[in-house]
Length: 139
Image 1 (spheres, rainbow, N blue to C red):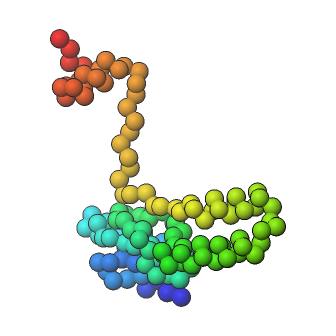
Image 2 (image 1 turned 90 degrees about the vertical axis):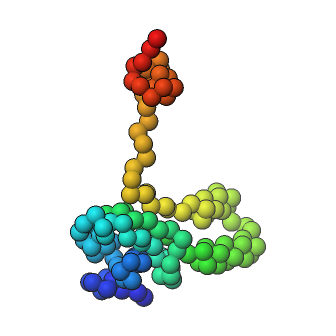
């Protein structure tokens, strides 16, 4: 099992710039130091085998997230296909719940939040802003 290079806790991500595996706590300490290190690209490690996953991002702090590499997802799907052939007598509700859990993957938020949703209370002003870039402009 890969360990955090700063505190020896289980590693959860890999910083490409620092070439270091880190736990959530140490990652937050290191990557909030200044605006340059917040730009470091970090990859989540697979929850099963601790290899790099396709999930990556940058920013001051990652929210603790469970991710899986493509190989472990593929292996899990193959095992479940095999298990489904053997266990056809299972309750249909249990099978549906298992499928829901397999298909959902947790993806971390990006470092910048999505833009706020504009209010539709004053649609004339909103339309004017979009058409000519000036607030409340009217003829």
